[in-house]
Image 1 (cartoon, rainbow, N blue to C red):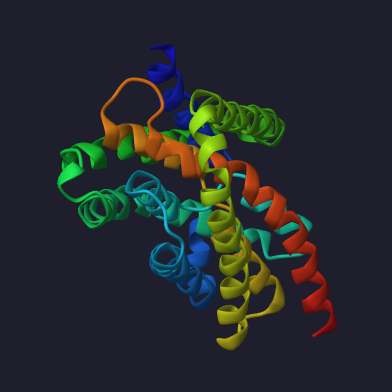
Image 2 (cartoon, one colour; image 1 turned 180 degrees about the horizontal axis):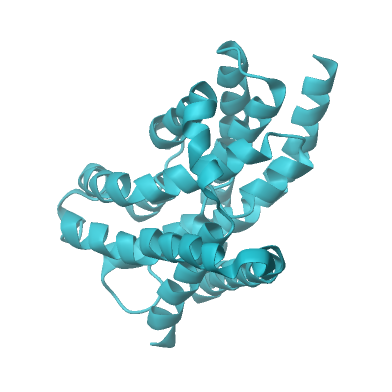
Length: 286
């Protein structure tokens, strides 16, 4: 099917756009603002899946959808998180760094977490999970395009800024196409399960925003840092979740495992955009 080729290529371009928007300074912030970067990384890589797992103990979902929610929770922040961080008055530089670092680390974290979640939620019904093959595929569709983007930006020189705007727009369009395609393919099942799955995803989104900003504030980070980390937690790379679901299912087309990521690709904006302005008002009054 054409989708089996278009989906990974589209995701690779999205990750390429992320890399093209990076500079060495974005990685240097790991050293210049280590506390904020480490807090953001731990909350995204550890706290986010823990929150998703906890909510799945409260909301009753079929195993396939519960596993899909966990797949979503393993993904790094989305490509639009930087834009939303700017809208919310957050630390955009920190947002770019977190998106880049956690995206690169996902090649190592996601395959092992996927294997654990499959055993936990699917049990004997779980497909065979080859951690090494998933890691290789993750490298091909995430890390390699980011590195290519970094290299081409350096070669682009003075024209890099103009090219970045065009590439970013194309990436956002591709992201929308991936989400819409996943929704369309599974539309019947989504409409049947929406009132079961939708509330969990929206509650998870709200909890992630609150936890991100609360923990940041508790640890003494600045308001802009807290807003950034909150958004990085709440805005996930749903396109990657859809792609990973396909890698796990090993079937043609878009897997049922992808339904939570596809739906979250819509609901996260419905929740996060109003949430951003509430956070901004909260910090302005603090």
